[in-house]
Length: 130
Image (tube, rainbow, N blue to C red):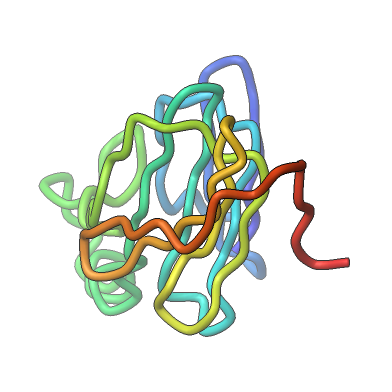
């Protein structure tokens, strides 16, 4: 999957054919994909969204090519919203189905199953993935 940020928002395209999968009206600061490619965290300035990619719905919509399932913004059922959290993400990563992140007040949190749990209060900024 290819993600492109523009003034209209974030658009996801199928890598090989460059067909639009879904356009989302959000201006992301960062996008974090889980290793299995099923979950994505889209982080804006003051909130983040956890979405689940529905590959089966994409395949079905492409086979049927129905205007009910494919609109100008792409395939309606391509992503399911798992959570919308009003908190800024400074840095984050996926560990399985668990999104681990730090926020603006340097709390180390994780999001799993629709719930946020604070692991620790950090005294300085932490960067994941290095």
